[in-house]
Length: 300
Image 1 (cartoon, rainbow, N blue to C red):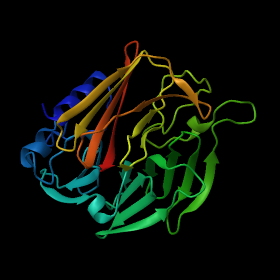
Image 2: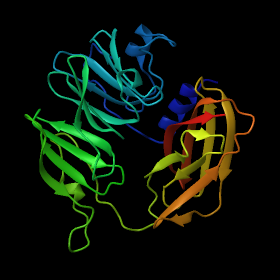
Image 3: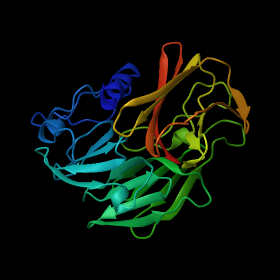
Image 4: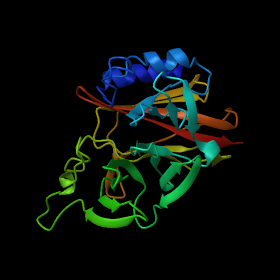
């Protein structure tokens, strides 16, 4: 079974919902990504425009469609009929994409471990680097003027003026002097950027997920998962083509690592070839399920 089918099923079970078009003439997908009728009908599997693991969808004033595909780590642009236009990915120097947004002109702002990148006029520009704060995982453009950023630990939300050079206007810390979170006060005109963050270590919430060393050169990589306390954590590892190579279910209690509850699993990759692998993390507590899809590389 192909990986994108497995992942799509997990998205439905996890009740994850992303943006979609309400236009009657454009049937992008439903709320739970059960279908990508228009896009994948025009762009069959194996083509540049095929979408495996959609995470967010945007549309500019001209009706062009933008989709962040987590599996291919790319932001793809299509016209209103679903025809593929271009792809922003590692070939353009963009790595580890976490989120994106667009302005009314169709300029693409990308959040990732390189910081905030701006793609316009077929060029990638460094807009805001991640120096002095954790890498951004959520961004939102408001009225083409303001850029909101949430970092990877959910510790801070920042508001920038991006009319010319980015100017930091305001920052929300995780907790104010009374010990209450105030990140939730940062809202866009359409959606909430962040909810207040509880200080409890056991809060079931997906935070940092990564593998180290990565790339793993002549060594076994360890997968680190921060999600609070779960009933069980499942890890599935696939080749880049989507073929399963390993799986494990963790049921023991998490450890306290750097003041956070975390699960760690070291994959014995002996006998596996050099290359890029995908690892899918699925943490479950009661009826709630958290998922994450990441990449790791082996060098033998």
